[in-house]
Image (cartoon, rainbow, N blue to C red):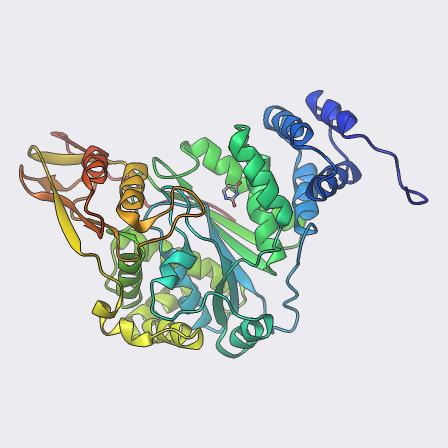
Length: 440
Ligand code: URA
């Protein structure tokens, strides 16, 4: 022990939280650091996680946990990039290609976006996998290239580096097997630590709620959004959250290459209404936080104009080019990976689509090869699902509900899963709004 260091035992920290007492910053750092250094065993950390799950954490504890996690690994120093660096995060959904749209859009108004994104797992996709569907796009850049691109072109999207928040990697794996994933302070600190370690000055959060999301109820999604906004603000990062509907997939395309195609359509102002509205909303808040506009409505309108004028799609072409990719995919979508088989999933009766379970569509896409069951699985970039019908649409018996794309000969499980995702009934359906709440 060093002079001035206080003697601590993990068992006392567990006991304190078990009895609903507030942990000090020193206790939280002790637990996180020693766990990352393998000096605290999994069984003690599991007990602490379960105590946090049941007793919760105060705002101060959650902010301290976030910073302890940030400091467990590399913290990107982006101080050489001029301007307010804005980032966005989605809590994960099905068909969510919003990052591909907002990065060039926000960069086009001069606000720097230095983005580190993740890969998909299970039924949700990841931005890095989608970008890797573009021939030769490099998702790894050296630190100098990354900073150069953001300074010069105002944008970069790369994968998270190996040593970004190692505490999160270890804790997430433990939470996964100890039934402690769905704890608001643990989710909030996990997400915010990665944003802060990757150098964001300001953050826009898109918290998804519904059948395809982590948060199944609006109350929980709101709680998570508020907790993350509080963490950001208490750590001097301007933070805004929106809560968006994930009861059915976003847009029509789920997969990798086909989501890139749909992102291109949105950037050409030919996207679906739900995706265009969410992308413009996220981008407008980013542009306001980045100081390009004083007001959300002004930003929204200006960004919409960029979709119409062609400036947004040109900026996406530039993003592809500066990261080594083939930008001609924008004008020739056949250059993107394709799948050998296209299978229509047909309606077994006539009626109106009452529900379209996003999680089941995500699982069908994964089974077709578009996602991973485990981290080690390879992706088939051409695989995925194209939705023909969405909630509220009228369908006739024998009409296509969706089309499956795959290179696999065996697709019956995926076909059944996709078919079961659609609930067809007689009632007219009232569509809920795409954006359910804003926490600013
Ligand atoms: N996403 C994260 O990054 N962390 C969580 O804990 C949950 C979702």
